[in-house]
Length: 448
Image (cartoon, rainbow, N blue to C red; front, side, top):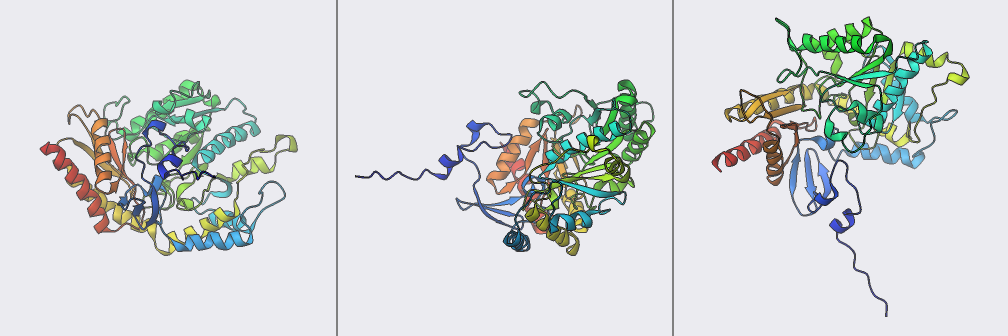
């Protein structure tokens, strides 16, 4: 007699999946999302959760956009994928590259597509080294990043990421990655000279780092316009113009990691436009498709492209990924850009971001709130053990994250801060629900 095997539960099935940045023992009660719409997630056990993190900083146009599903379906009916290696291309990849030419910054006209942010930054590092070799300066190989930065999870991008917990079990790190101080207005860790702003001090530290390493060895600086995983902090207005000038002075390429910041997140379509400067290389991902399909890439300046285009065959830029220029992903990217533009979501991000920060500032009545900060719909509240010492309270932030999730609001604890990065379609009523929930949790903790 045949024995019928019982179907394992969803949780039992999920235990065969390794989750990113997660200990396997902590999979007893994951949120199993069945469907989503707008800013809302709906779980298999009937819960409704407001996702104030837009997935992983990336669902910019919100969940449930049938336009993007239709764009993917229509393209897949014709051609889901073909190699984009030498001698082949597809219409959506060509059209999206043309659309992106000068889109973020006028001087960046050439695009290479990847599958996500880590691949984009890894590509940027290789491209910077390639460029300097073609310029006859093969010793320019070092990449400088800022402390508390996050740039990805490949071995090279992990090495550029200066958050120690990402390094501990994966060393030794790739050589020639160097860190300088981050321009954190609330807790700058470097030396402040008399009359010096945090922006000026952090820029000076960058220059001193370049001189200490030797300008002839430094290929590039990689910088997030707003440092996300490090705790969502916005640099002073005088920082990036100084950085651009320093990079020019010492022939150092500026790589803008706008994986989080790009495509409207900060209230500008791309964040460095706020400071009136342009990078040499732009790394992008996340918001290009709002997470509906994997896609990322880099854009490069004309001098870098000219170095590639004029190279002899034995010095070609031999780099690529199987899914570079994926047809369906690029079709979704094109439709996603149309939504961002038609619905003026960058402008909406600026307006709703101001409303969110104003509401979050009301939490300052609690004595353990140290700082409220943000740019567009990329915000954070930092919690401290003491207002004077500003020592971050990581345990409190994690407790708040968990308690808020239990009350139907998803946020993320980062270095003693709660981060907020909701879909750009969020409205004031939904923002009120986010902030009121955090306030209610703080009230209940105060009573306890």
